[in-house]
Length: 139
Image 1 (cartoon, rainbow, N blue to C red):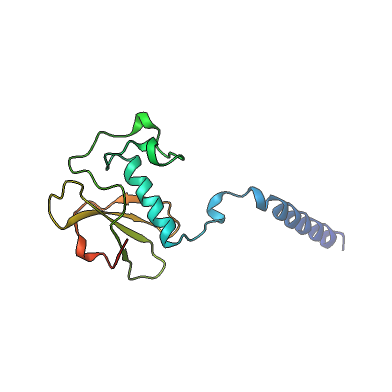
Image 2: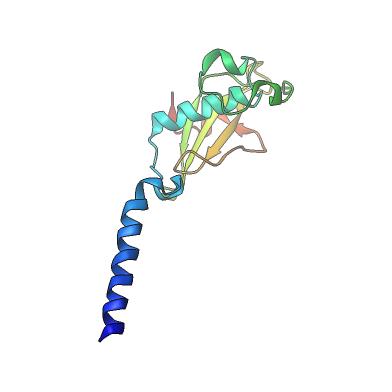
């Protein structure tokens, strides 16, 4: 009988400790799926912060992710600062694909895409060029 009371008290104490620690859990337990406008803003910031555009990273966005001294050199074909369009992924909820045009228009009708997960956290530039007509929605 005493062991069962001890077990009940132990379980209750673990539950109380877990409930009071909820506000302090890491952010990956509190992930929020982002919308289209938020995805576009994050992609535009990513393009500026990583040196893919001609805009200095600190000039447009106040909350800089990459420190200015760590920004790489300008890429050969810079992208425009504003997004051109969006390609909706076929798998619902799988993430976002934001297309940017080349600033110097070479090659014509082509650009690069910024891909991200549905939470707007894992970002990367698609390694190949993408045709602009692939944009299902123009911005």
